[in-house]
Image (cartoon, rainbow, N blue to C red; front, top):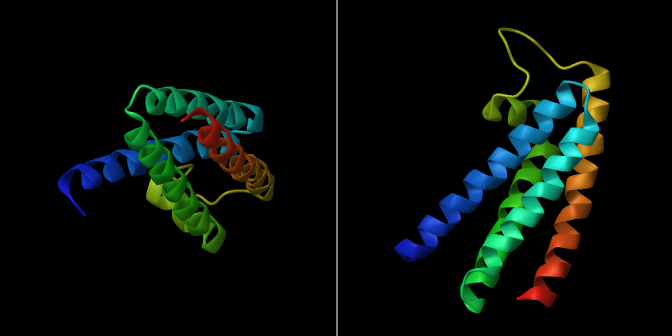
Length: 127
């Protein structure tokens, strides 16, 4: 992998981690709707970024974003609490999430999965 790909991959990982940190923070605070809004704003912003790049580079960027979204979703599905700890979401010494917070987080994650699919479809037709 060349240095440009590594830089782009690192940026994609950071923006996806930031997205998940925001949406899980909102979900653990009881606001799934704000978590969902994070997803929609993320999609708009990243598609706009991709559309400003040369066609091949923009598509590569969207593909990397989708790859990173898939990886973090797998991480969440394997161990939601470990992902929350890695992202620093909702944890103070010994604090655990409540069942209600987990339900809200799962609602936001379901929206994120649906958004990933829709983002891919939109990107194919825009780029």
